Structure formats: structure tokens, C-alpha cells
Image (cartoon, rainbow, N blue to C red):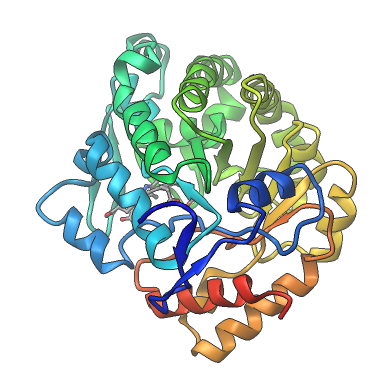
Length: 362
Ligand code: CP3
């Protein structure tokens, strides 16, 4: 489909894009300028809930899809064609950098990611490779260029990486974790090792983000998905310095930077001090508190509970309007979920949410 026209959220009909483009709306909101309506996208908007994703993914591993620019670009476009989001987020994963540093990364159905070998001592740290973004993750740059070419300048394109803490926690734990025992054990018990690993990973992520901007990303999102597992003081002292450094490097590319933390309601001021253009918040964060904390400092994104998308369609519409009412007059708000779309989400409910957004305030 050519830019300039978009399928009306799941209805299949074509309608013209207003005078302001979705990309301008998205970037304008991140600059905290008032918009005709909030722009919107959803974390994990490309994924298992879409039959067309399942079809492309079948017979291939997840990492095979990530490393194939043609497939990754096609998967990135799937939700845009169906729902007309204002921004596309490149199909990739936050575990691409650890893989480029020489760690095996595999995904097994129902078990989440598995990383091998784990990095729990200096010897393992020394074995890590420093990677060259263009040479070792060039598939991501190629995928971004393909999507950019398909989107034109009509819609925004988002690049991303995991924050240093979340990336390091995967490298230490070897996978997803509930309590982050080993990560916290090393953070508190072997501070020199932990800080050295954080520094090593942070140094890789800056050039990795810069490569994504050079390949066409209009904005960057940094996912500190597990940062909320830490108390404020520890986060401020041991995690925020690396994150701030990465945010500064990311902003030096000239594009806006969104910072997402799941369960980070107790960290708002610490996160703002890292200097992102926007904070992406989960559903547990109180809207009034988030607005107060960010006013004049950063835009906001998110806040809708992804489980709302399992409710009947009229509830999805009502809850979408409720979240828009809470934030629409805030200078700078991007509609999104508080975490990724879950695999069993009915696609027609995603359509209902975007139809509601596109009709706003109608
Ligand atoms: O948002 C998007 O559509 C862009 C692509 C994207 C993926 N992962 C694709 C993906 C993004 C931005 C991510 C980020 C990511 N990856 C995060 C941070 C966001 C968050 O949810 O907090 C994290 C923690 C990861 C690590 C990761 N990758 C996990 C825990 C899993 C889930 C494993 C599972 O079985 O559910 C993945 C796999 C993954 N990443 C999938 C997708 C579409 C599903 C893979 C499949 O097809 O089986």
C-alpha cells in the first residue's frame, strides 16, 4: 500500500491521512507540542497474536526471523497495514546485542529466552566480544532501511535496545527471572564485577542505537523492562549512571528518546533525571502523579493495561477512551499499552482500540 492512504482500523476501507502526517503527530507529541489527537502504537504490535505473523514465523526460529531483513521488515509492516498505527517499531529483540557479544540466544516455546553461557565472573566477562554494529548487526540496519522505504516519510519508525540493567540481568540470569537473585547478588556482593559488566554493555549499546538512526529510525526506545525490580536508592546509584550515559549518547543522534520501565512507578524522578524525551509507563502508575512528575520535562506514553484487550469490544473502547481522557490534554502523550501485547490477544480488540484512538475526541 502506498503512503498517503491507510486502511481504516481493521474495517478494510481506505481513508485519507489528514494534513498532519502520523510521523509529524508522533514526533510532535514527543516534543510536547499539542496535536489533533494523541499518536499511538503498541509495544509488541508485531507478534504472535497476528495470524499473518504466525504464518511467516512457522518453520523458522524467532532469531532466524530477526536476522532476515526481508522477513523482519515484512513482520514490522503487518500491524501497520491492519491497524494504521502512527509509528512502526522495528521487529527485533533486546537480546540481539548479547548475541552479538558472543552469547548463544535461543527462544523455546513457553520458556522464554535462554542465554548460554551466562556471565557471572571476570573470566566470562573477558570472553565477551565487543561488536561492531554495522558488521555484526547489519541485518537490523537492512531491515530498518527496507521499512523506511516502504513507510516513506508518512509514518514514524522506532528503533530500540534494552537498557544496560535489563540486558545485563539476562546475561547474568541466563533467561527471564522472577526475583533476579543472581543479578542482585552480584550487584550488591561483587560491585566491581557488576559495574564492569554494566560499563561493557553500555559501551556497545550507544553505537548500536546510532546505527539504527543512520538506517532510518525516527525515534529510539530504551527498554528497562526489569528495572522496577530494584529499590530507588540502588537504581539511582548503580543503574541510572549507565542509563543516563546511554540516553545522552542516543540523544546525540538527534532523534527523541523514550524510556520504558515496567513497574517503575517508584522511580519516576530518577528516570527523568536520565534525560529522556518521554517516559513510557505501565498501568499501575497513577496518571495524575505521572503528569505532575513529567510536566515541562518529558512527554508520557502508555498506561493502558494490555489485559484490557481480552475484555469485550465495548469495554476495550471505553477503557481506551478513559486512558485518552486522562492524558489527551497533557502536553505530549503517546497512546500505548503499559507493556507488550500478549500472544492470545484478539486482533479485533486491537482494531477497536485504534479505531477509538483515530476517532478521538469524536
Ligand atoms: O514491540 C515490537 O513489536 C517490536 C519487537 C520487539 C520484540 N521484543 C519482539 C519479540 C521488542 C521491542 C521486544 C522487546 C523485548 N524483548 C523486551 C522488552 C519489552 C518488554 O516486554 O518488557 C524483552 C524483555 C524481550 C525479551 C524477550 N523476547 C522475551 C521475554 C520474549 C518472550 C518469550 C515468549 O516466549 O513469550 C521474547 C520473544 C519475542 N520478542 C517475541 C517477539 C514478537 C515472541 C517470539 C515468538 O514468535 O515466539
